[in-house]
Length: 222
Ligand code: AP5
Image (cartoon, helix red, strand yellow):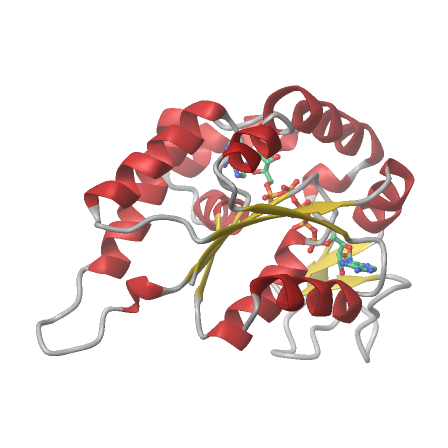
């Protein structure tokens, strides 16, 4: 199944994409995680992206789409005789603009595929701010935690791999507000774009992660 998760910063796209990709044996593709990896490795792409990210702005479409195209093409290219894993992915954080949505359609067409579902996760702004300001992420494996909602067993240490937890540079309150504004201005209209294609459903994501996950699964009919 080929799925896009839409929704504002902090709504739980990463959290739900993790659960969904495991359940559906699909590949989780997060442009945010890919970019942070490039920043950590101090690549040319990472150096270009860093200041946009730290200021809560979108990284330019051409940079994003080149990165996504490379990733999707890699999924579609498998040695002959093996099963292509291109059949399933969960896109988290892409597309965020009309240019990206159209470019994504073109890449998929080129690969002989299309999207099955777009899941629009929704929550009130105060919920988003509370989630983002308390988020902690593992430096090693990118697992997600929250200082009150989803605490690690041992303070500051990842349950999964023992890595150190940190607060994202863009999870400071002023940058969170900027990211929410950018979402309203540049991404929110994509909801209508996908509704017209009849592949979108909206889920209230204010409940616990498992509750949101159950709602998603019941809409997917799997
Ligand atoms: P990205 O990393 O994609 O950030 P985002 O979209 O702002 O989303 P977040 O990762 O902040 O939130 P989320 O919805 O995934 O929530 P999460 O599951 O972590 O992008 C970062 C930056 O990269 C962008 O600002 C931009 O600069 C750049 N970028 C990325 N993609 C781009 C693109 N396509 N084009 C241009 N630029 C791009 O959950 C948040 C917290 O809440 C966690 O602590 C979690 O534990 C907790 N939580 C989750 N669900 C629940 C729940 N149900 N109940 C309680 N707590 C919960």
